[in-house]
Image 1 (cartoon, helix red, strand yellow):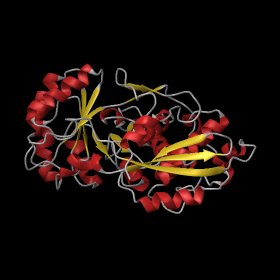
Image 2 (spheres, one colour; image 1 turned 120 degrees about the vertical axis):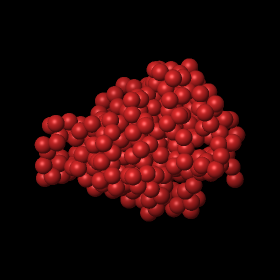
Image 3 (cartoon, helix red, strand yellow; image 1 turned 45 degrees about the horizontal axis):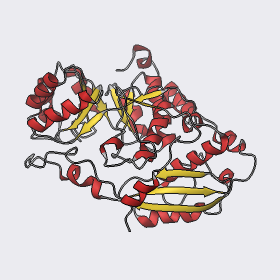
Length: 390
């Protein structure tokens, strides 16, 4: 929730603070620490498809309100990236799912033969030609740079401010009986938070009452994916959901006046997934939100998180339900972000395999931030071969 101090910040002072926080680490000085040439000699792209564990996505018999995207998303491939460098190090990265192979190949070709020191760390895409996979290559570049400098990635992003990062348990749309089983798994797994999906037409009030009884130790985030068309349609639903340990995410289209009225007329904290930094600033200025769900590449996330910190608004790291390399990049970005205190969507433990040599481990609702250079993780090559696709 917005603090009294942040409410007094003027438009000019907040914009100035955003500009000051736009580079929480000095990219040029980091590159300057790499004294000898580090040439990227070869870029390896590995196309993989790793299904979710059985039964963790949605209830197949949910009914007509089921969002089919939640049932199908793990069938789409993504790319693992290996940057083989002249110093013997290998930088590991991972793209989002459903990205074109040509986009990954174009960026791989551009990086081949480049000196690590020649990359533009201030550019949103690192100077690469295709932005659709640039964030995956950013992960690999920072892993390589961390290994070269002997520093963890969070240190390259401004400092390792958290030694462990809170994460949620997660599921999609569920029948009441299935949801109670999900709650049981979350509690048994030591999680403190459960995030689940809901949509227009779901009997969410009854479901919320049931899950709160089954998991009284849990906090909940309910993501409606903007499925309610307007304020008038969602307000009665929100009023029935008051009194629970609950955050509501994106219940309506991202009209900030609607979010502000929901905050004024109910007691529930509301989370916004901002479309861009300008909308994030306007949400702060108009006191429209209590929490942010932030994404973007690692540098974008830490910059946005710094703005949230100035405003006294907590955030979490969103995701597209990734594999271990990408999720670990989220952990490092969250560790470098003081405002990232809400459990994040780092969910690779719900896949059949996270493809990591040492599995991604959640203990008591937290993931420990690796202190080893780079991301601090490696690939399980046998698992990579198993899930590789043509």
